[in-house]
Image 1 (cartoon, rainbow, N blue to C red):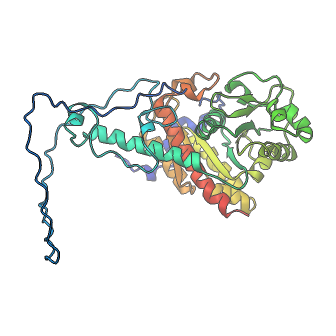
Image 2 (image 1 turned 90 degrees about the vertical axis):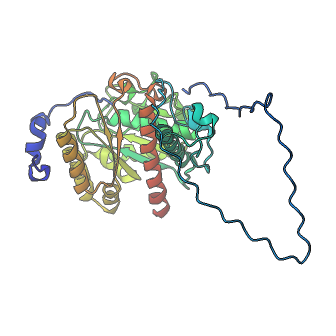
Image 3 (image 1 turned 45 degrees about the vertical axis):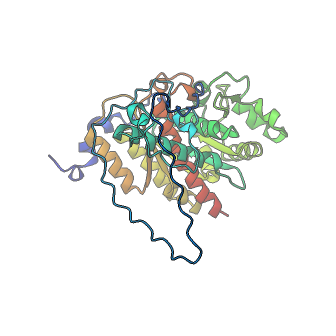
Length: 408
């Protein structure tokens, strides 16, 4: 087996370099509440009655204390074959957000040490390896959602989603990442377009707005209430609000346009998610970078996607201290689009991102709803996708708590 580190990126990626100019369209409900389990009553009919336990004798006053009993070590229970994991339908999730099994846990509880299924649960035995793995996953879901829900700041915060390469899922990532945060927090998330030219945000979001970003830029100085601002966006079932482009002849956004709209949105929303274009040197991108608190970089498992993502980081590192901090704290979200993946390419992608200084990476599995390239609804995602997005969102929020608390 050849050493991948000895190959050049061109040798590993093969045809990726030839496809660098190919631009593809972006590809990236709560379920009924489960009934609370009631502890089964132990049957007593037909069982022999045991004599009452004798009371402990009262120790006379002044008598020496009774020595503590020495407990013998209990030998571990013999291992048993792993049980098959419980199959879950598309609408079931371990996530608290989506009414899954983790919803019965509390933020301070630990994973149960006893099984709750089958004969193991009846005899209060230890959970099988499969059930233990599910309990641990439930605990991680709960922890992620607790981080997202309980995070607070003394001002509104801004998340910039960017990659120079088109077709890597910037718009789906913006809608779904912002949607998951809004669903967990109960709203106060605005997702809006900061590309210099009109993008696909309006097409991938739910609903059809009558007016949008172009009109918002025009009227921003006259907006004085949340209700007035809402007229330029479309509410989502996730409780987020999307501000996209309705008119194809919208003028190109400038640095000043982006800053003005961002400040206006920040008067009425706690969190902004900004969906950028493909030109990191454009005026609109520079305006978004100037106000962003954290950078999220979507990538696919391809050479051109990661190379151009690194180019964005290099552009930011060549800027001022704020831009350099965005690059240093960047979070990568790798989406799978269903195409076959080469293990050597995946290893090289991870190596290049590591060498570029990216320390936080999240992976979102393939999801048919994202691949449909239609309007995106958080509730229609597969449970594994929703849980992966919640993990990525928790990473973003955790970083924001550190960055914003130490910012000027």
